[in-house]
Length: 108
Image (cartoon, rainbow, N blue to C red; front, side, top):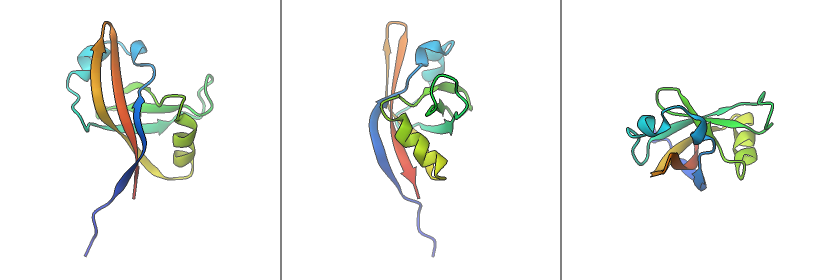
């Protein structure tokens, strides 16, 4: 009998960094709902941040990066072969800025 895969939240309520630099982010994110699954992809060759981790939506668009407050931790999990994902907890439009907040989950 197979058991269901489990996941635990290892980072709560982290704002996705860099959404200001995504063209049409407000329109793109209108389709996102709470719990939306987001891919976290290591960007080890990023010239600005050795711990960079891209945040990608279901259409595989880069919509930002894991915040620098926790990106080293997330990058080390990915580098260690762990399965992690983001899950959207909230979306808010503040003027021209689309604020996306996610949790980071470690999967079995």
